[in-house]
Image 1 (cartoon, rainbow, N blue to C red):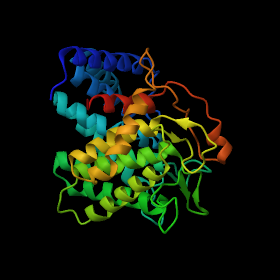
Image 2 (tube, rainbow, N blue to C red):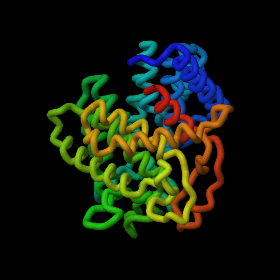
Image 3 (cartoon, rainbow, N blue to C red):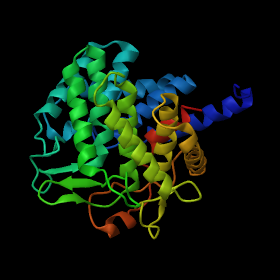
Image 4 (cartoon, one colour):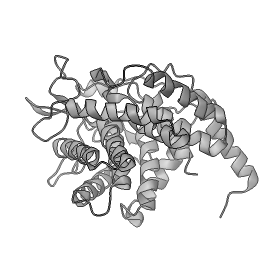
Length: 340
């Protein structure tokens, strides 16, 4: 059933307010979370028809591709997926060329024993570390690039990447935390950080977006699907009755944070549509997360209860991050709202 006209207008108004607030972020090409904010703005353009959202993204990406793309390690967080989405919008080959350069940069990074790429070999303290956040950046981009240009080497590169991350970071065995993901892994000491809520959201979205693009015939599809279902099962066990999650999933003494709820609502709706998980098993978790996330949308279009950038550290690091309006909250929120 289609929404009533007044409901559609109200929904577009919410999307517009969220998008307008998102564009106030001082994008710096590139900080982590900025790519997904651009993806969200493209989704807002499709919902509202407001060309200013598309033009905002186009301007940033055009400015980027006119520079030397893929020459700095910090570009591992550059918006590769968004370059390809913009190519599909306007057909500018420069975006595909830039995406290939980002693919080559990713390939150049050293891999740990699991096959996961370590993105900052130039930085002491980080050179042998990986972060769960990258699961939503690398593999979906590389698999999409492989599909677009008809080159399986990119697809295989993306699969090696996400499988390496999942094998290093996901908890297996019989425990209450089974299926959840650690924030990081250090080659010399193993897993580190905490069972960070937003990090598990990045893992969830990365698995879903990769599987959506992956051919049914892929030999790696079964393992990725199993890992996705294990993660969903772990998240279901730890969801607060109100629909949010604590910022450290297994620590109810930490505050409730909103980004995982937005990510779950978006990613599970996509997973249901593509038959990646059992809808009956997780529909209530998705519903509660969506309702709770909508309750965190402020009148100015900002998503409330979003924690600041969170480096790997001890529990106190996660438990004391301040709230604010950030692209890693706004982008997933726009993607979630685009599904309504």
